Length: 237
Length: 76
Image (cartoon, rainbow over all chains, first blue to last red; front, side):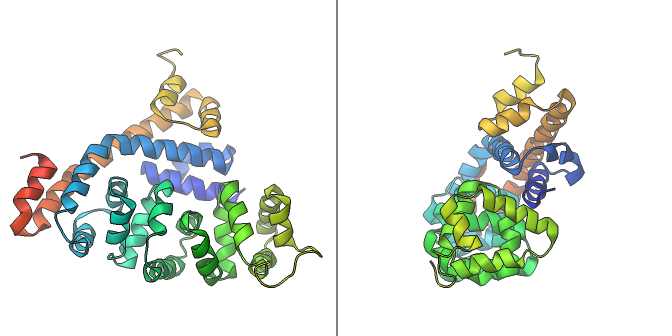
């Protein structure tokens, strides 16, 4: 059993609007493969709706972004707002996102194609990122946090990730389904935080999963997390 | 590719990376059928939800620009 696989199954079921049990047959595949399938399914669903999303995006340019944010909260399911994001420029999307209430913004993030997140997150004011962080922690929505963390800039990872707290970070780490993101996080996070995450995994199942993840990392990143005489145990290493 | 092969059909309709393509190719015909049905259902629900959302947007948009917004959204 893998937390990352569980997480991908939940995301896939949510995308398709079905119960978790309906996608249980995908459990025999690894999380990265399920993620690839999920992103392809999402793109297929989006392709049909793209012309309408483009029209909604065009009409949104007639209004101030504060009004657009309020109207979206009032009239649009978060899933559809997430679809419209693909028809906006990252600057427009960040402008509207920064004017949304954190609760609605986090709902949108739950449905957003993770490939769109990076350029938008890079343009968000720190206060918006912090409000979203607090809301996701309050909800214990580790699935969404893992997607958001993967899209953060290097500076945002260094600034925000340690503030998630070690127990949350462990849950987020276990839900990251691609090796490139895990490697990047392991290279950016302070050594002390990394080792606290490893120490936090007290449950045998979590420890075993974390060990598998660490084994897949490049040697330098693995040494940072597990400790090495050459690597100082405090600071950013 | 066989046009009647459900796996080939699903593979063609999706832009799959290598891992996901392998995944789809190793699904049973029943699983492919289930996945295809769920995908079709999600596409239909998305279209229906968009239709009702367009109506909702037009209803809440400020009256001053409602006509312009409506023209963009529904083309009339």
